Image 1 (cartoon, rainbow over the protein chains, first blue to last red):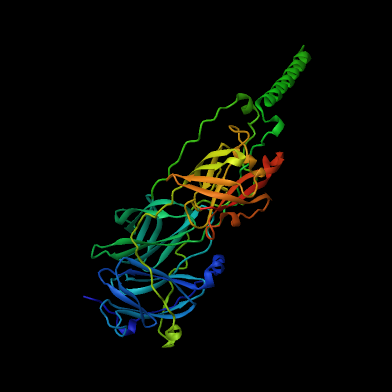
Image 2 (image 1 turned 90 degrees about the vertical axis):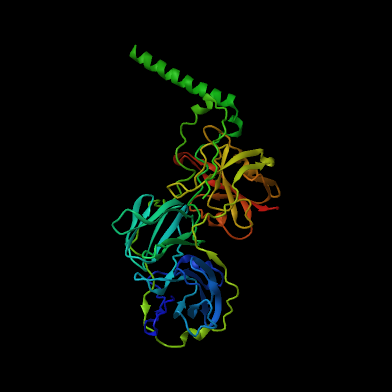
Length: 274
Length: 233
């Protein structure tokens, strides 16, 4: 059965730019337009997605990620209908209003809330610059499940994450063994699975599906281009011998000379002792 | 992710006499690194998703109704391995008699690029572009000299001249050819490496070593020698 939201609870998603300053990187993006990706994380519900009344994603399947769409900043209306709908007059989700700010990067996720009802959450993706060698891991709870702990390489990295919250960490680029458990438990409900935290990239991992229906899973999204250059290239910690003394015999003479000096010094000390 | 092949460094004949003068090698070319903290940070649920707010101003969403969205790429969001371009394994620069093995290198804890200890060995910045990429910069660096190899092959980079050809071989066996366009000697103090580690734009090769004045107090050369070469492929 398809679930539909009563009009009264239709959410208008306000993309408040939560406190964070616009990333320095944003200015470099072509035309400073906004980027919008759409994640379908409602199990068993193929849909069509309409943006401003136009069919934009046809037969969009659960577990799929669309985009990024490059859009001028502004307000957009997104409606999600059953996949066989003729138009967007009877959405199963929305319509929601998205306010996209130029230079920013967003993911609109259609997913289940903690109780299992379909909803839409608009996430702002962090595209601020990363230190050379590091990647950013963002985890988002969009599953019909209670609070969860996120495990990385056998340790709890994020505790008590609730639907539809997110947490981010920056760490040296690597491949992590990630798992999700219900908060306070150690038995994974998802994973463990290898997640590559790529350098200069925000890797977003979504826990989606439904605990009750036993179809919890991970989805991933990568947003690249946040790299920076190393602070230096320390390629000269050794003084290259001058051309005239680069040959072993010259260095050998130098060494002999030093040994000679040592011998003299030794001699001097021996003398003094005498 | 497929593990990257790491090669052991080539054995080079050592001279005991040479080793005698080499005990000094300590830190980098320049203590320029501002030091990045490699430890993971765990901010509390950061910005978080935007809050829902009550519907208002009906019709405002129609403001951009004429926007042409075109074809939207759709992919599975399953965990998947990324395609990794073959990494460079050999650098040949005949005009300066350089023929070196290349190994992938990342970033040291001080925020500077890692450089192979032996000057006979070159390091490829593994987070940057590979020679098979159509865009961005392949950065390869080596020490000017080291205990094992007092005069490293790239020490002669200071004599590089525009037009000279360089070949990089990747581990798929493909040869990528470049021609030198610029030879720069840049003071390391405060040098911004951003232009040399570009990951977009025209594909090119950047070779880096050290040179210029030796500064004994810093156990380092004062300058980076940087050679920029354009792709001939």
